[in-house]
Image (cartoon, rainbow, N blue to C red; front, side, top):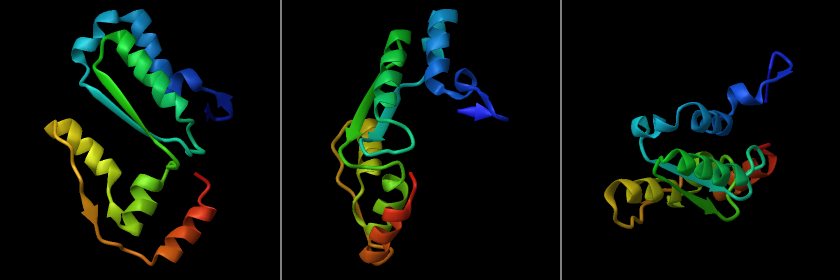
Amino acid sequence: MSVEGAVAYDVLSPLAAARALAKDDPGVARFCPPALLLHGTADKSVPAAGSVLMHEALAKLGVPSSYRLFEGKTHTDFLLEDAFRGGKDQLTDSILQLVTGAPQEGRHACMCPRLLVWLASRVCPF
């Protein structure tokens, strides 16, 4: 990550921020809501290991945190491809399960021909 060509990982990274808080203000957890981290294992933009590390950093702070890795999902599957393709909505189901405490199984209609969704997923850089 960079800002104006200079490496700025510590400024832009949520993981770096959580780790810094653990050092600077260990009592900050009382101000933080529970965190749910959802990540696809095929994400080319942000490695799925980042969510695991973030979960560990939040746990070290004392912030209630959970994570779920979705096998084969990319950075855009949940919000783009899956939404257009239709069918099971894993993203919404996971969020609603956290909120309600009960398993969820939502489905939505196909918004675009599957062939177009497949083609778009092949050229998507994320």
